[in-house]
Image 1 (spheres, rainbow, N blue to C red):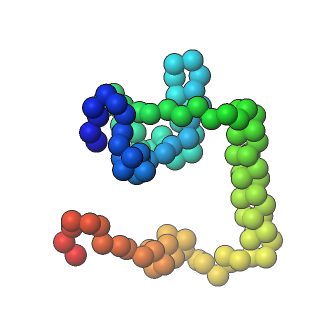
Image 2 (cartoon, helix red, strand yellow):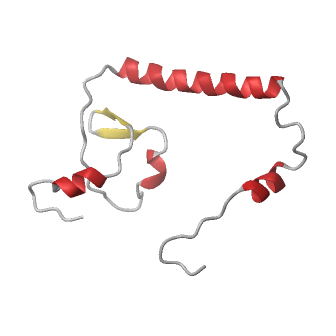
Length: 106
């Protein structure tokens, strides 16, 4: 990405990946899937947007998502929705759809 000291262009800004984090002092604590994507072996330039919402609201929203997921899994368990799957790994291999990666031979 081009960086001329004036910030990203409108096009670059539109396609910048966004990850959730909590800023504590001068440290970012990655939330969700963000921690998978940033390299740990070198410094990385970032743009940080301070959200105008209390941290408690953000954490409550994330906890609510977890509670909804747990409730959905409990309902699936109650109705034995996955009881006919004998081998979970084999089921995953059979149902997983492989996709062609850009720039790779098929």
